[in-house]
Amino acid sequence: MQEGEVIKFPPIIELNVGGRFFTTTHLTLTKCPDNMLAAMFSGKYSVVLDKDGRYFIDADGDCFVHILNYLRYGDIPKAAISEYVYREAAYFGLHGLMQELEKHPQILAKIQRHNLRSQYPGYSDCMDSIIKSAGCPATKETLDVNVLLFKNENEPGHDEFNINHMCLCKLRNLDKTVAYDAKLGPWKHDSSEKDVLNCIVYDLESLGFTITSRYLGTCIYQHETIECKKAFYAITFHWWK
Image (tube, rainbow, N blue to C red):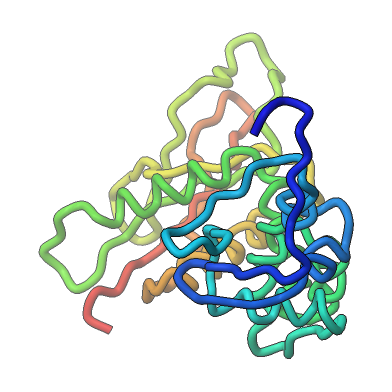
């Protein structure tokens, strides 16, 4: 295809979508503007052909049925498969379909959870640290990962108060102090440390881990009357449940 040349497509289009074959019209594929399919078949770009001359689209062929039915009839998939189709709708840039699917509770909840996580800087790194620590060799049925959570950073209140101190927690009823394996904070969102812990627990359980959590206490560091007060929680991984 030379620069400035416009490809003329036939009115009937044969497609190979991830190994599944479809027959539709050029009009259907370009029905909704400003999306990937409309751009592909606008005539401005070269489209890859498979060995049999079908136009090839590297996408989920099973899901493309629902994409095509939306373009043909405006059909909205049922809630049971909405997450599955939403991913493909986003891939193709079908914003109208995405908006309709976002009315389903599971999609809306997923978006809300994503928006919430984005309010916590370093959330992904914290999750990675927790999972990495959980994978350490263990000789027990359970393994504790200690997480430090703090909505607010320590403010300098005294020249001798070390805001860069190492946070440690004294375990209740035990003559033992522990450090943290992962930390998260500070954040500006109006969420408590307990709220953030619940978010972490939800995500770990969604990944398939069997866990429990408990409050351990606060950092023991203080200078005169100024205390650190950053919160420690233990996330216990249960390997035999």
